[in-house]
Amino acid sequence: QVQLAESGGGSVQVGGSLRLSCSASENIYNTYFMAWFRQTPGKEREGVAYISSGGLSTNYADSVKGRFTISRDIAKNTLYLQMSSLKPEDTATYYCAAGRSPRLSGVFSAPQYKSWGQGTQVTVSS
Image (cartoon, rainbow, N blue to C red; front, side, top):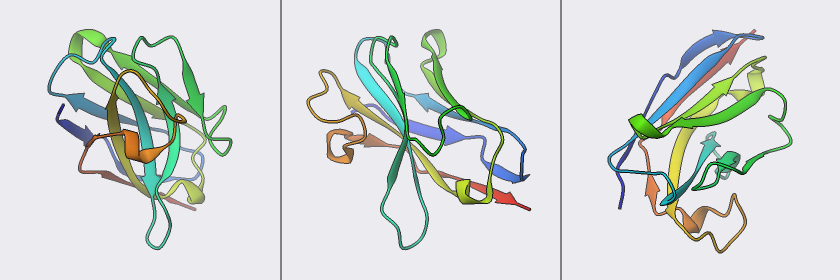
């Protein structure tokens, strides 16, 4: 399975922006569909943004639509999450995840993602 490593988390004030990166150990183009999830203590992991293996399809949780953008750099095998207009409720540990195509379940169905990064903390304060 592909190895994933996130970076870019940190602390930011309400309304600010952050960009998370997720470096993959091998080619992701047309091989892995990928997503960003987040989790806070005591809550289930929540799907935030998804991108298909070919990069033609994206999907977002309603809570982040219009504020977050998922993208990737195929040459660098890197996935990104650009987060803008951040809110306190965006505070969480963010994980990138990869599943080998074809995708057989819903975009945010966690069990189909066999590779996970270690997580990066995002804290939004007022």
